[in-house]
Every structure is written in C-alpha cells, then in structure tokens.
Image (cartoon, rainbow, N blue to C red; front, side):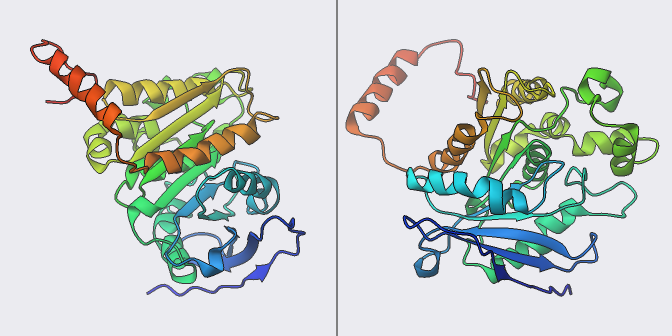
Length: 320
C-alpha cells in the first residue's frame, strides 16, 4: 500500500478576463523516486462545472525543465489552443530529476517510469476529475519529455491511448553499439551510465529505446490502437530530426499507423514551438474524432474499393 502526501496551492498568476484556467501546485511522496515529487496541474476553463471527467494529458518537461515549464512557459500556449477550439483537458507536469530520461535506472535507485505509470497516475485520478480509461489518458513532451512519452506509451499501450512527441531526444539506432558521436555529443558518458548502468547495459538500453521497442513488438502497438504523433524541426540544433525520422521509418516498415511531421525551417527552440505545440494538441482531438463520414465520402470510398477488386497488391497498412 502506497500513501500520498498532497500539498496544493493556487499559483498567484494574473488570468486574462477571457478565461479562467488555473494552475495548481502539488507534491507527492513515493519510495520509488527522490521525494517529494513536485508537479503543476493546469485546469481548463469550466473544469469545476464539467459534467463528465476530462482527458488527462501528461506534459513531460525537457532535460533542463521542471513543473514551472507548464506553470509559466506552456500555460499561455495551452490557453491559446483552447481558445482556438482544441477540446479541454487536464494537463500535468511532474518535476523529475535532471536528465533522468523518465526511465527506471538500471541500478534501481530511481524508478521514474514505474512511478509515473503507477502511483502518480493513480494519484491524479483520485485527486482530479479525469477519465480513468486508456483512451482518455495521453502523453506528450518536448525533447527529453518527448523521449519519455514515447517510451512509456510504447511499453504501456494498455494505459495510454495516445502519444504526441515533439522533437524527442532519441537516437537513430536500435543498438547502443551503433551510437556515434553525432548522436550524443551533448550527453556525457556519466549521463548514460547513471541511467543504463556502468558500463552501459546494451540490452537494457534496447529495452528502453523507443525505436527498439517498436521494432521488437510492432504487433502490440498495432493491436492496441495507440495513436502516435511524431514531429521535429529540420533545423534542430541537436539533429534530433534524425532520430525522429528513424523512428518514423521503423513504424512505417512495421505498418504501425502514426502521424509524422518534419517541420521546415524549425529549430529545437524559438518561435516555431508555439504553433507546433498547438498543432500537436490538435492531434489528440483528431485522433479520437468519431464524426461519421458524410454520404459523398462514403460513396467515394465504395467506388474506389470496387476498383481495387482483383489487384494483386494491397494497401501499405493492410496486414494478412
């Protein structure tokens, strides 16, 4: 039995007259990770009067961030997205140890993945009016947060219905032995060894590398129906477009449906991040859109299906 200690306070930030979203700050004690784990929750306008539970979105911060990434930097972007019609959701950003990769450390000293998919998820569902089902539980993140969101979604598609990774901090490889200096020039040996063991356990790396997970178990991703969104800028200063493109190819080759954007003239930071995040948030709404097809669309599909009869080849995503 785990016990949670919650401290919540409203952030005293000015809120524009057009809306009433609010940020709450809290913390949770756990034996799995260094405690207390501080977090920020962004509640959309109308949360208090919502008749039904809202989707829960984990917004995982990058390597140098913490919960203030959501409370200050990302908050205005979420509010803009809601004003533009993106459906409301409850957003949470937990602060994690710097450069943890959101992974369980090989030596067992910190178990961030176990904490976030277990105790912390239970805590959020107990304290906030959020959906308890996987289709209403989503992941996103930027850079290191993108890496963590992909790993957790790929390893636990039974818990998460959708993942949208922005410029994820992943390498374009399946094996650690394939790592080249260009793939890790900003990450020291100490960072890798703290997470994956000293010396690095190559099998443990592969078990936690999103591309390797997808390559080893593509049928699990296909059968789960996990909604997947990848994006990166083609001028990313860390060259993370290479890892993102590589993962896209792995998913494509294994016929795992996903959406992929290589954003022209976009860097790892800068003014493109705001519209890119709004586009990313729109993915969650599109992914679960159940609007019925209109008659014209149905007729077009039926006409083309008739033309495909007798073809020796099938569509890319059609699996025997």
